Amino acid sequence: MPAEVRILAAVLIELQKFAAVNIAHECCGLLAGRDGTITKVLPAANAAANPATSYEIAPEDVFRLIREIRESGLQMMGIYHSHPRGKNEPSARDIELAYYPGAAYFIIAPAGVPPEDVSRRAETQSPVRAFSIREGASTELDIRAV
Image 1: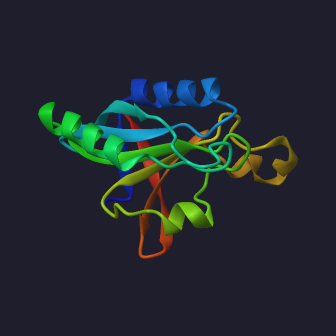
Image 2: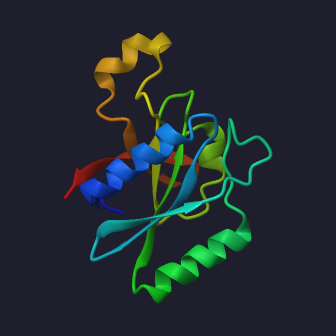
C-alpha cells in the first residue's frame, strides 16, 4: 500500500458529517473507488455490542456492501469508523480486528483531538486520518484530497 491515499474531497466532508451526526455512537462503513482514488462512501449499521466505544459491521452487511461495490464497477479500498470521544488513531482493538491488510483504515474524530489532550493539538493535521494496518502494526497514510 502506498504511503498516500487519494480520496475525493467531497467524500472527506461526508465522513466528517456522518461522525458529527452520530456523536453518541461510532459510525462505520466501507469506502470504494477505482484507479487509486476513493470516490464513494457506503455507510453500515454499527452492530457492536457497545456502539458508543466500538464498531462492528455485521457479516451480512459486509457481503451486501461488497456486492454493491462490485456491481458498481468499483473496488473496496477502505474502511472507516469514528472515535466520538477519543483520538483519531487506531486503538489496540482496531489493530487486532483489522482483517483487510490492503484497505486504508480511516478514523474520524469529530472534534479532532479531545480538549483534555491539548498537547497533541499541534500534531493533529485533520479530524480525519488514515492508516495502513498490517501484522499488528499501524502506519499513518498521507491523505490526498482530490
